[in-house]
Amino acid sequence: MKKRTLILSLACAASSQAALVAHYTFDESSGQTAADSAGTPQNLTTTNGTVAWTTGQMGGAIDLTADVMVANDAIGNGNNFTISIWVNEASGQTGYRGIFTTGADFVDNTSGDPIVPGGGEDNWGINVEGTRQADMRYNNPTVGSSHGVDVPAFEQNVWQHLVMTFAGDGVSSTGGVYLNGNLIATITQPTFNDLSYNAGGQIWQLGTDRNNDSRRFTGLVDDLAIWDEALSDEQITALYNGGLAGLNAAEVIPEPSSALLVLSGGLLALRRRR
Image 1 (spheres, rainbow, N blue to C red):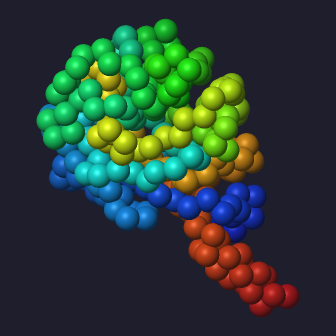
Image 2 (image 1 turned 135 degrees about the vertical axis):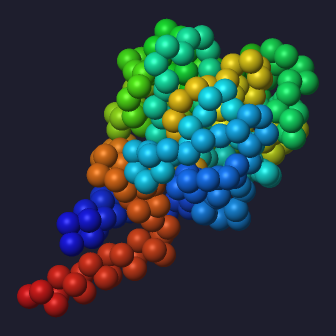
């Protein structure tokens, strides 16, 4: 009953028209594939190393030790998005590491090996720096490279929630980065460049910087979700609080039709209790 009440209250707070285009709960517990439970499934499959599975922030998690997982196809395509991910970076890791990234075809989609080392154009995603801060990357067409937005106080050996949003209107674009439910910084670009997830061979990769394969991440990852809209501050706070309570992204921000069913069922239950 308590979990049902929590889901109902969070669904009210986080109601959204955003569609969940990809969702990885990492609850498999075995194998080398993480299933996508949303939209047209774009599963993540190991290309380098052998991933392990462990207990996560909610349910299971993937344990990456310099391993790489690659989406089997494009993950959506559009002008607006939100990426939400729970990360527990291993203690002692140093240097710049890619967590979930995409970009132009500088890394082979099958092997994960670099094609052109150091390529920086068309770079998007979530990374972590050795200076104990996360680094969110937005493509910047003005300079032909990417724009990084830092998230300070990113700790090791503890679960933390990272979110990056992007909203474009065809003329300009705005991004927001969040740590543990709080807005840390925003970025506004006077020129517009949408995230064409599959343009030029772009494929999302988990566990490495797509533009430099030597920057592999070591740590745990849980509940990776992507929406086709920029979620609000309120919704992102609800995602964090829901995660602390053991709820995954789809339970906190259900699909519009599912949210209506949850709210209708909750109201019906309340009427029956009267």
